[in-house]
Image (cartoon, rainbow, N blue to C red; front, side, top):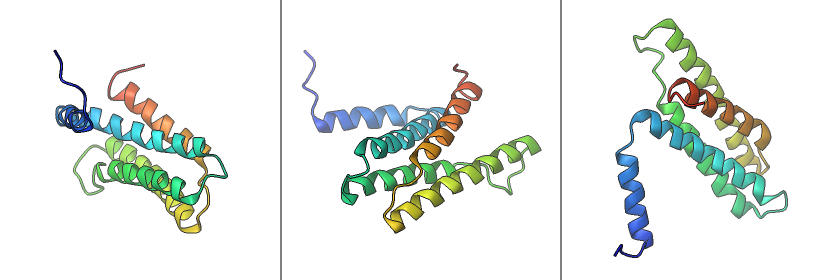
Length: 134
């Protein structure tokens, strides 16, 4: 008989799964998390109290910051195409973070649809190009 799933057991299973993932799968999880946080912002509606909106803004910002930190350094010795792609992603990630921080400071809604579209495009490209999924 399988033991009951407790929150501690569920967390441990999640931690074990994350620790067994490769870098490509981890990036997919972080992209999915950022998109999930944006979906929560969309679902909260325009009249939701700020205290229920802010954690999703900050959670998305943390996820995108992780993606930004994982990019190839501009000083790394890699081919020109890799540097170009990393530079393009860096610009997009910085724009997303800027939009989220601006919304947080001004206590306004970020452009969720625009942010979602950009992150979905990145996630789709990652899944097709790196993970080989269609």
